[in-house]
Amino acid sequence: MLKALADPVRLQLLSMVLSHPGGEACVCDLLPAFELSQPTISHHLKVLHEAGLLERDKRGVWVYYRTRPEAMEALVTLFAPETATA
Image (cartoon, rainbow, N blue to C red; front, side):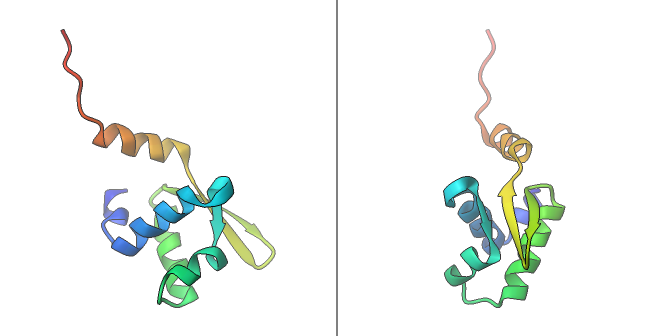
């Protein structure tokens, strides 16, 4: 997962999907934020999907992406400060 997020474009895409209304977005929603082609954005989203960070659902000609709750919990756990045990 971390390797997939090491790319700044993919990190920004994940953030945009997380903050998009309804918690899901299609390439058509994300494309205007980048000076990249649609196939390039789709490739980055595919990498995030293959890393287990995003789920996808095809509707007509568009593919909609949403974050996987388990993956987001794993990231939060990974970066959460450890608590001291008494």
